[in-house]
Length: 201
Image 1 (cartoon, rainbow, N blue to C red):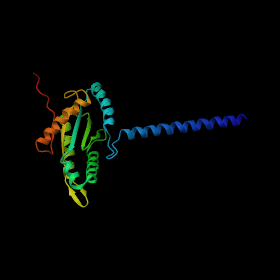
Image 2: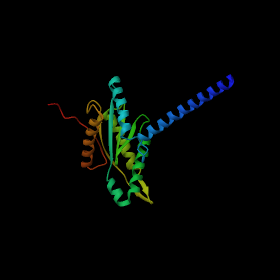
Image 3: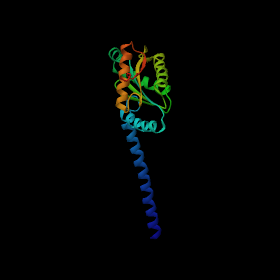
Image 4: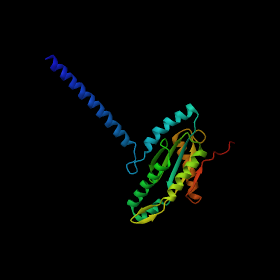
C-alpha cells in the first residue's frame, strides 16, 4: 500500500508538472498571437506599446537614445485598385520580409495598421535612425515585388522622432513622426524626414 501511495503521489506530481508546463506554453503562444499581426507576422501595436515602455525606462535609466521610425507604402491604393487585394497583401508581406532583412535583431518592426509600419530603434539617435531608414527605403525600392509575372515597384515614405527630444510617450512620438511622414509624401514621396522641434520662444 505504501508503495502504491508513493507511486500514485509521484504520478499526480508528474501530471501536475506536465499540466503546468503545457499551460505556460499555451499562455505564451496566446500572448504571441495577441501581439502579432496575422498577415505579415510582424509585431502589432499592442506589442509596440509594451516594448516601448520597457525601452523608455531603459533610455531614462541608462541615458541611451531611442527613436521611432514610421513608414508608409507609397501609392498602396493603386496597387490594390490595379492588381487586387491579394496583390496588396503580398506587397505588405514583401515589405515585412525586407524590414526583417534590413534591421538589427534588437529593433522592433511592427505593422500598426493598413500600409503603415512603425519601427522602434533602441540605442539609436534620430540621425542614426535616418541612416537606418534610408537603408530600409533603398532596399524596398531596389526589390520590387512580382505578382502574376508582373513587376510592381514599391517605395516608402517615412518620418522619424526621437524619445525625449520630440516626445515623452509613444503617442507623442507617433504624432511627430507622422507629421514628417506626410511632409515626405507632400515633397514627392520615397524619402525620409526627421522631426525638427520648433525653436523655443
